[in-house]
Length: 156
Image (cartoon, rainbow, N blue to C red; front, side, top):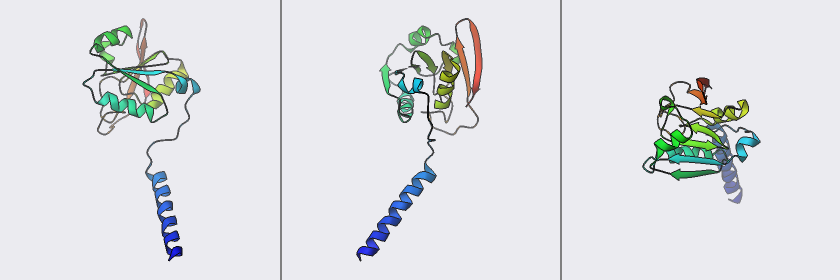
């Protein structure tokens, strides 16, 4: 009897471990020390739920995130120089760099690797981090800042 219970427990544990490995969709990625140690603040409208989901997404990668709710999002975007055609629902500041919208973590890491000061994923694309739906195509992410016109950073 004890042997049967032990074998059953081993099979259940093995199934859970294997199932977790097979069905885990979160890639195990190592990010730069600069990104991982950077302070992260998300500025969001108090009535927006997807921004909280984006904060959870960043936390799932080990980032420490502070959420600042404000009814002055237009002023925040102006302060950080986010062009109107690149705006989304929230603005995130990571280590002094600006991240506009529901940005994939790979694009944030690319921003740090390339020394870019600001990036944007305009609008609220379906399937982007924090947004429901399916990602139908790679997200076009733009760098911006200063007097230079926004430039495609890459597709993620």
